[in-house]
Image (tube, rainbow, N blue to C red):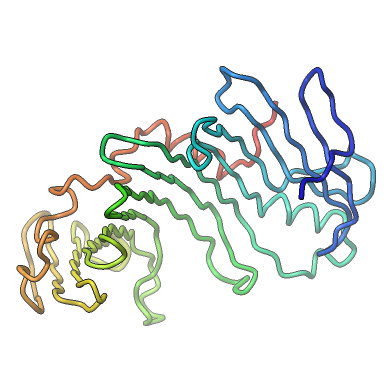
Length: 286
């Protein structure tokens, strides 16, 4: 059921709901949508805002984004969403008498996404960045950064999903080895079944120039059919061990790069830089 806006401007096509008393926490909550018109980077702009009372001058955006719906296909279009845990934390500590003692998520998450038809089927893509994230459940954990690319190609008969993510974290459980490694993981699978994963780590407690690689394949029942580990230093193989037969990987005997599966490395540097800035700094200030 749609809710009529509290106020709107028919000239600028801006719509505002609230502020309403928050049902989940301190203060008030409001929503904003603007139709920016055709020719803009995003046709629609939106935000969810928090306030300490009914004064709209004190509202703070904690979620912000834009969208370009496809008028000819309801599930096609593109958009961007920023979830600003930092803004929410700052609002609570500044306005809520109990805010400083509340467990809260920290950091920011931003994603750009789109879905459109291609000559091979419907393609969905999501490029996202997480910066300085600390879960409210583990407030003493080191802030985490994460970048990932997710996609799905659906031709009506088959679905191919692929994910590529990169982060830095300590892969050892030994407290004496506490240096975070740079870790990257790529995987692809068909119809939520057979697939291949490739992981690589470097830095941290690994020797200078050393890289550790792992490959795993699984069948339609998600049972592992092949697993290999390799370490190399400056391009020269140090050690290798494997279980199973690479031939059991079928289509996925070839690497994901050889199969042409999209990767984070394929994303233009300027796109990743823009996403990084949003994830680090929050909502752009006009």
